[in-house]
Image 1: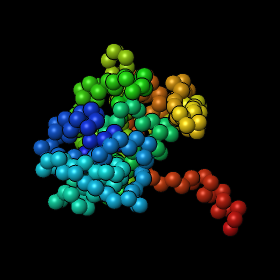
Image 2: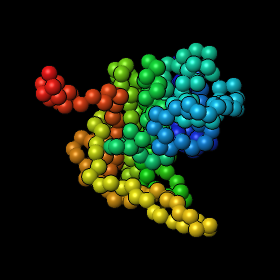
Image 3: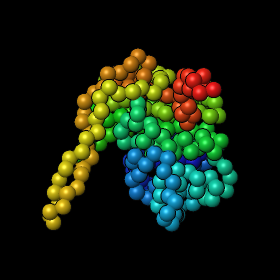
Image 4: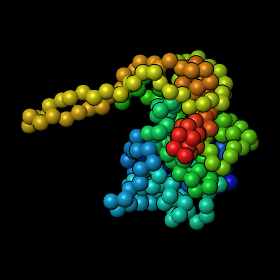
Length: 253
């Protein structure tokens, strides 16, 4: 099995090294094509107005001066001699659950693999405290990732679906197991902006996050991760709302 791995935290990220270990437990044919620098929040962005630079680090390792989507497309169409059998993205520093999945570069890397007809999984490691000086508990992803990957590959999933896996941060308690979940929705909006003044008297804004837990619906990715379970959510990119489609069709026909 030929595996392509990518991420959105950059080529030197700790989580990428963990993902390489997970991939190596499945195959000895592993290719790394990841952004040169951090691309968190890039979603499915493409680099359209700048040159895409690629730095070859070793025979099967490349850094791309672009987004996770750029990296996967370049890997499949230009850098790899043969199409990969599997795309793995991550392991992200921080969870990608609920509405985060529409912003996540980690999830986007897996979505691009799916869009190219390749089975794909995104991996993220939850953090109870999200600060630059706080390390994510990647030992949880390292311990459980190979087994989760093998179980998912044995089970299989539809071609128009990618799998979004989030490892919990159970605070020293054992991981409870694996749950298949739906994408949840938060009842707390955590993003805020702080207005500051620079040394020349101009103003700028710094984005931050409130660490207030959301209410979690039964069966959601939020609930699973909060409760110490590994969450696996099957996602796709058909954004059509079927109920509204039927209502509008009846009203406007």
